[in-house]
Amino acid sequence: MTCRTPAVWALVGAAAWIAALAGCAADGDQIVLRLAETHPRDYPTTDANYEFARLVHERSEGRIRIEVYHSSQLGEERGVIEQVLFGALDMTRVSVSPLASFVPELDALQMPFLYDGPDHMWEVLRSDVGREMLDTLEQADFVGLNYYDSGARSFYNTRREIRHPDDMAGMQIRVQESRLMMDLVQALGAVPTPMPFGEVYSALQTGVIDGAENNWPSYFSTSHYEVAPYFSLNEHSRVPEVTIMSRLAMDRLSEEDRQLIREAAWDAMDYQIERWNAFEAEAEQRIRGARVTVTEREDVDVDAFRQRVQPLYDRLPENQRSIVERIRAMAGPPAEGP
Ligand code: GTR
Image (tube, rainbow, N blue to C red; front, side):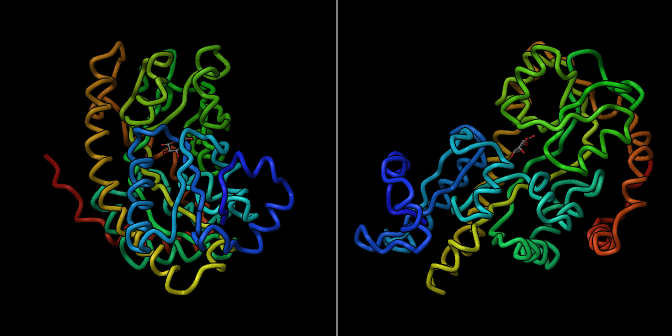
């Protein structure tokens, strides 16, 4: 929790950190919370962060202000998660993937081919399972506030179309800083290379890696499609986004303010989903209009992908297996064959 801008922090240094850690009652008792976001200003998660900030400001009648630092101004995802853990930063919006390095149970929410589609995923996230998974974050001194949509992730690369896992054999594929994502790429026969998001464009351009994986909006907004023009709609996973808060920052608030923040974050979800759906459609349209070879879903041997990643399910620890079973039980009936 801070009462000043980052530039001032730089000047006042250590004394200011101590003041921050002790809680801040200056500046007319205004509470300022800093939130880090990796995406640029016009991305759906960033829009939702601003909506969350707006709701908090409005409902606290201006007493609580959330400052959003987008475009990785405060660092890449793993680094900002660590800052939240130590209380140097109040909040961040991140993908479940890097967060699961701190709270392994979260892997149960990002298993490959887990959800039937967005409706199934949202039913899970809004259910007791979703709430319980946010609660598990408390083990690591995080407070889980909400989830956002992140569509489906698919592989893209600089070399060729991927229809079958064999097409990516030996390719160096960038993954998020996540054990599960590394295991997934390895199970498919490629070579996983964990790397911060902001380094991927130049790594693709210089040939340090052959490919990466992400959803339409991230593939578009990072311009990765310019340097890796083969996008295969294999849709191997849906990885929810999460907003987390530092336990230290939360503990300094009154019970009433804690509740206000939790509710505002939860209420910002619908707005994000709306923005997500619109931006996802726009990103797809823009990419299809660019020089990109899109391998359609029906041209991908999805069963071959599913079979290759089955060992990840076979070696799930018991606590995650039971969550996965609850998630699968919420899926709709299997689709009728032709
Ligand atoms: C995006 C996600 C980011 C980041 C990124 C990545 O889909 O929204 O938070 O995790 O993927 O691949 O690093």
